[in-house]
Image (tube, rainbow over all chains, first blue to last red; front, top):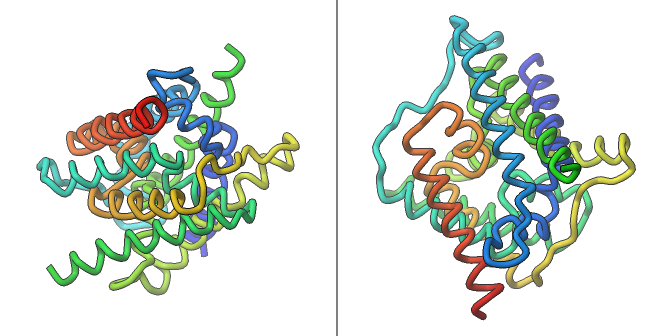
Length: 138
Length: 140
């Protein structure tokens, strides 16, 4: 129950942050990526503030022996740069640039009830399942 | 200057969420991972599924909370048509699953951990995102 409430509150704060930051407005996202056009640098502040505050906060919480509700921290340990990482990130950037939605804002935007956003999220889920199925067979 | 205040506070709120998830649950806050882990062929079950669904429910509630406070949800209308929304969504899904993360997991959390893989991922998706918008807006 504590985990569910924690995740719900964390999700709410995250979604509030995305919406306040302008990440849920695809016109702003594409304006940020449009370096050659009327570049809108505002969203660089989202990443800047996000990384700086998280960097400091992670230092503090990771100095503790374990998280409050779990036995241990689950931190990715891989350091190799492989083809799936680069190809996947390259594809993600293309899809992000085409419509202006990354996964978090796409999910948050569902609440507005726009059918086209539902279609984008449905297609995104289909893409994720496709990779997961191929990997499981691999 | 004023147009940078909301993005900065928004970014700090996203960070607060990531710190909360790490401090309480010991987890990276990656949205594509949280969603992807709920999907076939090996979806999370039991408590591992419940907290992920709760997080996503919270994500959807965020704009409602903003609307309650400020009167505006912050949600903008799509800027491309339905076919492009579907194509873009599918590519985002494939890319984030293959690349093990998106703007949150690699961007916010990975860069904060100084992860080499995340620096490569962020550099790559920023580059292809900028290139895609350049091609669509200025060449086509």
